[in-house]
Image 1 (spheres, rainbow, N blue to C red):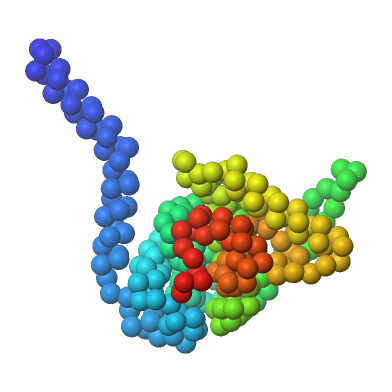
Image 2: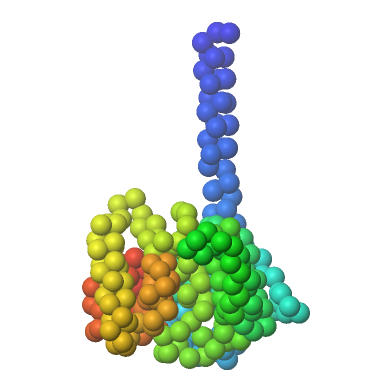
Length: 276
């Protein structure tokens, strides 16, 4: 093989490798751009006006970004009805629009690991088998409004999805909560420390959220209340999900009561809902 032929062969190999490495990402970006060029359907806008009253109060640029993100989520994520639920556009749009809030700052890659969104009509029962302190098998039963699995599923109660969208100021939103777990699970088990990026300051994140988490546990031990729901004291993952709900639904109250926590979440999510 002469030099020219060898160089040509090497070039073909390099092109093949580049295509294998970058091809899927290129096609995905192209497909997403095509989806986002489509107008947001009028029927979907009516759903947001009727079911998500806070949407109309958002700045126009935020509304537009939410709609574009929601279009991608609806196009890419399968929605599956459970216990007799028939999936419709209202369900897709309302879940996707609320989940889009967490991606406004560019985090999460459209929930890259999420494979399915399962919707039950209302709260659902989950049976689990674990072990107690002695290592003996122990069954537990819980009634849940939502759940997020590391394997790529989010499970939601439709009643609670509706309630969360209807009251944007109560600090409770099952979609925000479970999709925050998805962000936390993006690079492994949920532990309250989502991927902060290559240059993320994990030391500061751990110091701020760890301190706030410990303070919450101490307040509860003393029988004291506060802005943060006691459920956040379950573990670090639940703490992150609960304070994410507060960040988007009661940002001013969170900033006043826990300024460092609010600042850390604002840096992570890349937005400040107080300005909306």
